[in-house]
Image 1 (cartoon, one colour):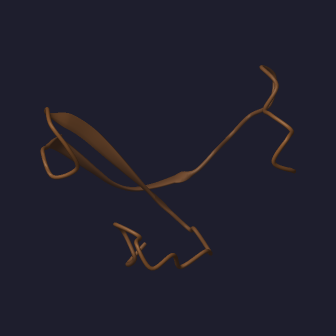
Image 2: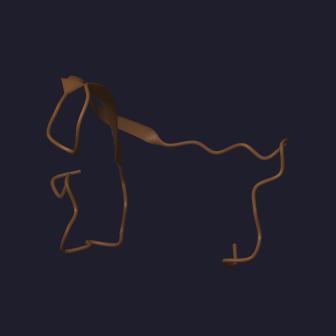
Length: 52
């Protein structure tokens, strides 16, 4: 998918859930739930979930 294309309503996006962190307070103000997905091939240096 190019950067100017977007998902249509009938497109399905799937992912494997690696972890769900409830009551996360580390990434800014407020309390949130964070869902970590498994299988990203990018290996970004700032990644918050490199083990997945």
